Amino acid sequence: MLMACTSLKLAGWVIAAAIVFGSVGCNRSREDAHAREVATRVRTEFLHAWTNYEKYAWGHDALKPLSKTPQDWYGQSLLMTPVDALDTLILMKLDKEAAKAKELIVKNLSFDRDVYVKNFEITIRLLGGLLSSYQLTNDKQLLDLADDLGNRLLAVFNSPTALPYVYVNLKTGQVRDAKTNPAETGTLLLEFGTLSKLTGKPIYYEKAKRALVETFKRRSSIGLVGSTINVETGGWMDADSHISGGIDSYYEYLWKCWLLFGDKDCQKMWHASIPAVNKYLADEVRGELWYGHADMNTGRLTASQYGALDAFFPAVLTHSGDVARARRLQDSSFKMWNMHGIEPEIIDYKTMQIVYNGYHLRPEIVESTYYLHHFTHDPRYRKTGEKIFEDFVKYCRVDAGYTALQDVVTKAKRDEMESFVLAETFKYLYLLFAPPDTLDFDKVVFNTEAHPLRRTD
Ligand code: DMJ
Image (tube, rainbow, N blue to C red; front, top):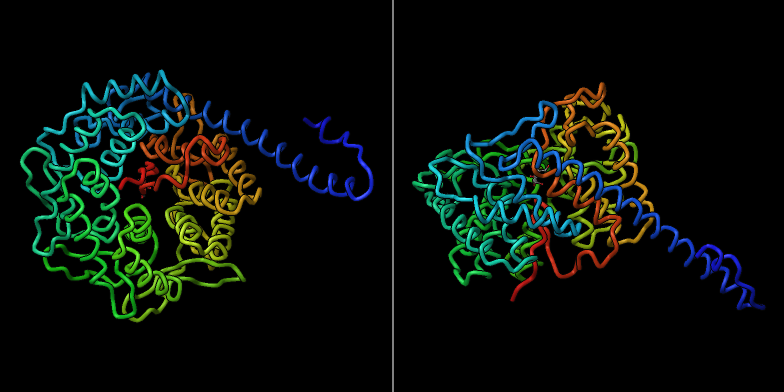
């Protein structure tokens, strides 16, 4: 290919054009070839994590990669890692591993358990994972599991406000914990809505949409939401507004529910919300764009904190058409990453000091890199992604998989590999470098756990 690229011999303007367009074409094909090599390395590393899950934690929720022991969230397994990882296995064409994981799920997964589970986590990881894997395989058993799970989760919405309780007992339908947040009340509609479309049962869509609307309705007069809300009174328990964990995916779903379902109410809620976020939470420091914390009632900035979770926002910005802001915020996220060659969970962007020094192998910065590359085709985003991947391998790879860091400065490790590492971090890294036909971006909307949900009519 390189020979063909450099040995063009033509005359006059044809030569000039051939040089310009030929070299662009050559650069592009060199970049693509390199990208495919990186994709292969990502796939190999994903397999390193997956095979160690198989070896040391098969049938359990997660692998603890330092002690090489299994972990179950609720004392009994709900197959968190296999369900979360299945669509990544499929997209990476790891057919043997995918078939084995699917068999484990359809044979062993039962939601008939006398156990309280966290509605938000179970919805984004399990319901989302089952639905996307169903759409990729057409295996009806996966949809039946999703339907059974959705039906058991519905009890969470039985509050005086229709906002969901935090926990539900999968067997008895009893609910508990009224103190929740906008991410937990507003990050359900992509999954419940898809379940409605696929089963023909409207109740899932109605309940999850109502919860989203009830959250939106409680925004302040300047358009912001707080971070803690009581589902029994509907009152805010604090006025702390931000885009970080606890609120983050509420905004993500306002946008994505409009995209996935064409739901005009979601479009309106998005357009009524995002200007306030950009007006009150965006902060300019040293000519850089960051998003901090503000009082939801006054809009006064209260803290200059940003972190690994906030780094999802460039993806939502670019997805919704605001590429300029997305690019600037991504530069800030990458600056945060490069402070120690791995991002801390939270920093103070004014002082550039660490506030919380852990790293949980989070995907958000990679997710935004992937979206920005998809929409701009700017090669710098693949370079960013490659640097992140190299650092990730350098500091987090261990004998039995990938492990979180206790401290991004010393690189001390902690015994944890969350299922989202396989569902999201590796998936977004892979898609950033993989051939475009791996997944038709325009035909799907990713839930907040990176499960691609196909548009259905
Ligand atoms: C994931 O479970 C989801 O991405 C969620 O929206 C936020 N937290 C983790 C990843 O960091």
